[in-house]
Length: 446
Image (tube, rainbow, N blue to C red; front, side, top):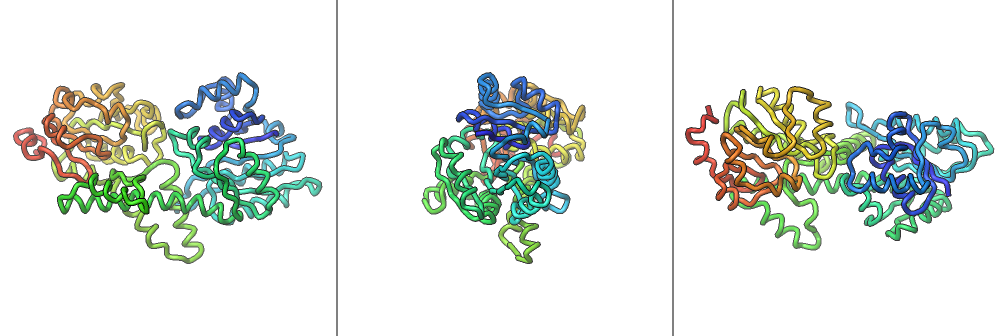
């Protein structure tokens, strides 16, 4: 069984390495020669727990190889998995230029019958367009079939999600091709759902949009809690105990980010525009999330007034723990606003600081520890619930900070413990702690 995975980004690399792990012969192709060189030496360009170790093991055992040579990548292959990025255009629609380039390249280099499997997240109808384009470009003697196989990987747990997937979706209008791809996944021993090709494409978007809806809904409930005096953690727990609702994605905070939810909700919105359908709930989800990302900054301005010249520490830069991905991360938007307010900013993240440094350079101070980030700070913003942050000793905030004022966008700390530690502590959907006492005579409201 010869498999080529096109694209060595997050999805492509995790897919290729996991296929190799179960014994398939895998070739990973990318046009980025420096990335291919690093991967060939066992160096993983992204942070994903356990991935580099698995990569090195399969390189050593000869089950995976990397190349930027298209002829080598596409020669004598049974299955070609396309896992290139589909970033959003300025209008929110999916940018398919990388997918189209990959399809063109396959058309020029394919030398035998093959099944083309699209793992990239694409609008409904894209796979049909891929098939038509291939039919126009490949020699008549070569037969190709196109299958939709959307991914459902969570950054930070991609390997776990591959080997313990809730479901594997295989969509094709050719039953034989769909069955062949489904058989590829049998060693994973996970539930497999076979559908028509358009349903498979929409399952991906609909799934992400629904999860984004749960996040925006609970954040709206959290905002209502702040007006009514209710506690969002109790409310969410009571909701989640209902099996019809479930507890997942009911944790209030500062909104969703990352490479999937923001991009996919916007792309689905553009798709509804194309079909002239007004998806009111989806539009509200996007609007709520955009507003939620700004909540902490506005709370700080309301409570503290002018942030100009204040030392501000931002703890957590990645959009979620256990990844270095800062795409659509609430922390990035906060930093932009803090720079506009002319604050003096220090930041900490266990792995994502390098990506943030590429964006902001010397305008920030990059600390190696939480202690280093908060030293001398007037204000702390918690933006990612890394264990190093969520398990930080609250008694240390007053020791290192000029004033122990914390705005927690992830509700990391217990309210009673924050009060006992003497913190001014403002979180999401819960009562603020020690607001008046700690700000008296501090100079922060000047």
